[in-house]
Image (cartoon, rainbow, N blue to C red; front, side, top):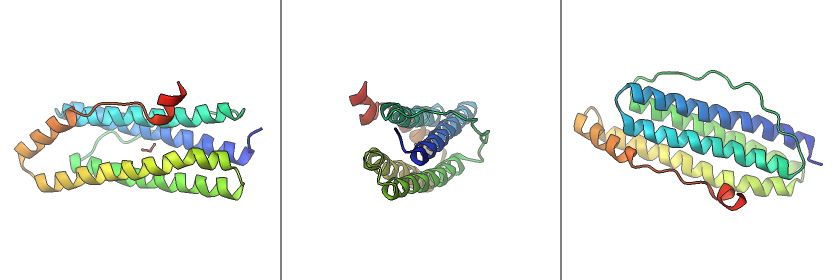
Length: 173
Ligand code: FEO
């Protein structure tokens, strides 16, 4: 049987991951409407990755004989002032998610739930990458400033982002 405290905390994390997915889907729709399809593509892939994060946690609870409980997902913002505003909001959001993952890890250690701690290791590494990706794009947008050609080129670059399944799902399926 799964530790009930850990199960509740992971169920809360599943909700946070699905909120993240919904947030990035909203950003993708915003950029579609703004005529920046490359930015929309980047956020659509982010949307898929967040769904993957929720799936990894759901699979894990099921593997442990626990029970996944899905709760309501809060409403998300629907527009941003600029690409820089959207990426700053994304970085800020990812930093909050990092804190949630760190808290989960601390709980797993306190509860001596080593299997959960191991599962969380992947997420610790993933959060480093998530935050780094945002910072890189914020740096690029800072260089671009209000240069239209720069924005056009970054839009083209982001259109090339492709989705690949994260390793925990690639090896589980
Ligand atoms: Fe699932 Fe972007 O953290």
